[in-house]
Image (cartoon, rainbow, N blue to C red; front, side, top):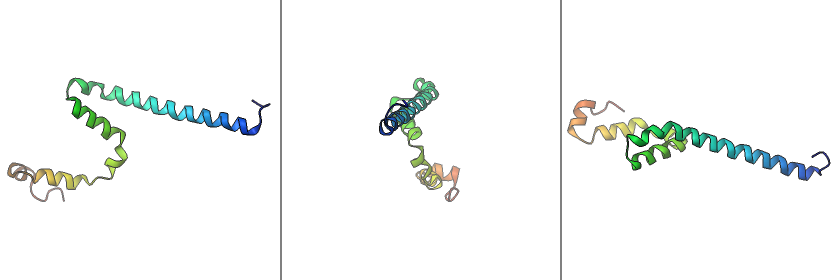
Length: 90
């Protein structure tokens, strides 16, 4: 490595960095899959897919207003409104 030109050594450093990034992504993916494996036996494929997407894109989920979503769901029926109230989540 020391006999190589600096430009060539830099390329090897970039490749090493890329391999580290990819291997980290693979490890996180398998770790996520391990945590979600038990869900496969209990829920439908569509719901499992939704959970995986939510887990992968959790930054977008963090930006959602959960109180507004909960208020909308609670307000959809009279039974829900009676249990959860009209303005409980606002």
